[in-house]
Image (tube, rainbow over all chains, first blue to last red; front, side):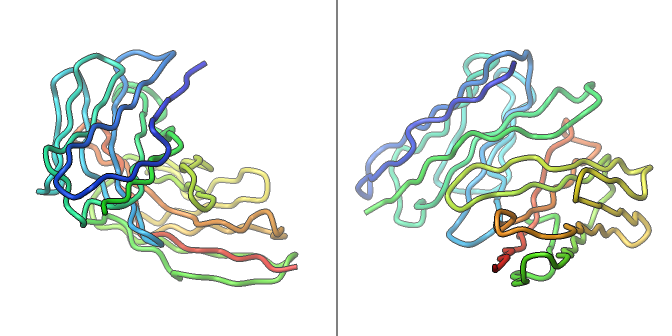
Length: 115
Length: 112
C-alpha cells in the first residue's frame, strides 16, 4: 500500500534561518507531488507541484523553493525565512496523469512558526 | 490563486440535520473532489466526481456537479458530531498533470 511521510510535525525557526521540509512517498511510482500552505483557518494555497524528477512548477512567487531529487522525494526549502512564511505546510501525492483516479493523499503536515 | 470558492464559510447545525456545502470553480476540469480536514491534520479524500457525471453517492455523502454553472454541492445527511471538520472542494485541471487546486473550505460544526 502507498504511504506518505512528512516531517517534522512542528518546527519553530528564527527569522533569517534556512528551512528544509522533506516528504517521501512509498508504494507508488512517478507520482504527482504537491506542496501546499494553509494559513490559520484558511484554505490551501498550492505552492509547488511536480510531475517528475526535476520538474517543478511554482504557483506563487515567494521566498520558498522546491526540489525533487528522487522520484518519490519532494523537498521544500528556504534560504532565509520570513515571518510571513509561518503556516501549516502539507505535502501530497496523486496518481500520474494516465491513472484513472487523481485523488490526493496527504501527509500529516508541518506546523512552521517563524519567530 | 484559488480555483474554488466554497459557500458558506462556516455552518453550524444540530446532530441529525443535513449539511449542504457549495463549491464554485472557474476553469474546465477533469474531475472535482471533496476532502475533509480535522483541525491541525492532513486532508482526507471523501469522494470524486468526474466531469461527465452529475451525481454521486457514498454512504451519507451525496455530491452533485453542474459543469454548465461550474458548481458542485456536498450534502451530508443525518449529520453526527464526528462530522465536525473543515470540508474542501478541489478541482483537477486537464493541463499540468491533473494539478489539484483547492477551494477556501467550509467549517462545519455539528452540535449535540
